[in-house]
Length: 254
Ligand code: SF4
Image (cartoon, protein in one colour):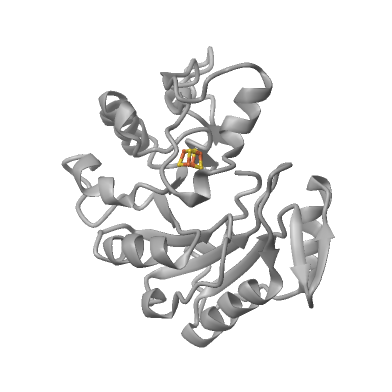
């Protein structure tokens, strides 16, 4: 289930160039840079007539997929969002950010070593952003950490950052008409690094322009996930603790 407490974003790095939020908003004549609090803001704590929470215990809420949870424009709303996340400790909140460098200043006072019900993923699309964001990520207390390489724009060496606290690496190409290519050898290189480090690995989707063995393929949106699965290169670390939510996540469409 998705929870988008605010909508809209500001492009930040290369991975944002063909952002799907801009693409979808653009097709409706809307400006994605106008960030607003949505009507779903209080979704996690909404109740039914019988007084029970509308969202049942145990659900995972994919949070802020039409923005960035750590966007500065949303600073005024975030304390309330954290409060809902704290109150719904029976749900799991899955958050992906390109703004990990804003996390320390954006945390609630009782964060401690991290809320147990939050997976906070750090996105890196190229080596430059990996080398900038991942040292910060590794130094930040978060209970569940996942690295997302999507859209993967070049080969990346993640090996210095694949410590035991990283629960999973998720990789995918870029979608949309202007998508940049994703090369299978880049994906395979990441998979090998993960296997070597004992970190779970998921090849989520190929993107629209996928190159394998020197041949370029145009893959329709509806087949990109299935084609990635067909590669059969996902890896689950052997000592995977079934209580850990990390490697169970399939984040679907970003
Ligand atoms: S951070 Fe995410 S939502 Fe924001 S512009 Fe970049 S890709 Fe789009």
